Image (cartoon, rainbow, N blue to C red; front, top):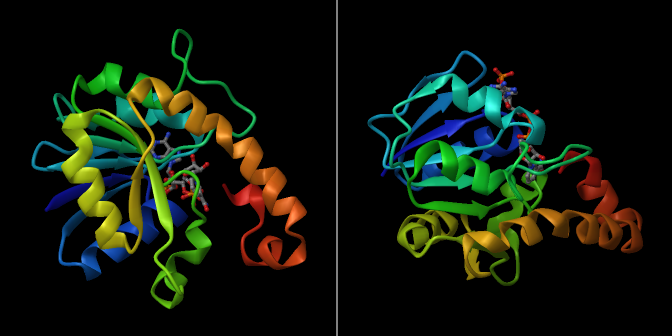
Length: 182
Ligand SMILES: NC(=O)c1ccc[n+]([C@@H]2O[C@H](COP(=O)([O-])OP(=O)(O)OC[C@H]3O[C@@H](n4cnc5c(N)ncnc54)[C@H](OP(=O)(O)O)[C@@H]3O)[C@@H](O)[C@H]2O)c1
């Protein structure tokens, strides 16, 4: 599949590496922007408050299948939207999914060592299912669907629960992946 990742940091760069290993053709886009017209799937993996700026610099988004992996750390979704994922859809009018936001990028290189395949929850449009589920499996996770795109705000809000779990599970998980990285 031809994939464009917008944001080439821990998440964008990390998933790009995993998808390339699985045989996909990945274009990596940073702050300079780029054209995603050729892509069959687009991943958005920029800081949660930078989504509007980032998408302003990306051409060819119309109708694209987009996976939004962003988290809202200390910021709100753009005005008028309940979630970043719904804002993303307003820019593309294409199939949209929220996914990869509640898995630590720091653990990507350990996915193959897990005793059972870790889950990766996604919420979003049925039309995005085949792409998001294939790319979830190709990254090394088992996809779990959490309902329609209206549930993306709950998935984004789940970060607070995830932070609390990480804190409670103590030093081990914290050392593996400090919650502020999400
Ligand atoms: N780290 C995790 O474990 C984790 C897990 C799940 C979700 N998340 C979420 O995923 C997103 C990315 O996290 P990350 O850890 O990958 O962050 P990161 O390593 O800091 O990478 C952020 C990337 O976003 C790009 N960027 C920043 N502002 C931009 C803009 N205005 N336009 C275009 N690109 C822009 C940067 O581009 P340049 O390369 O040009 O500087 C950089 O490549 C965040 O929303 C985060 O909350 C993180």
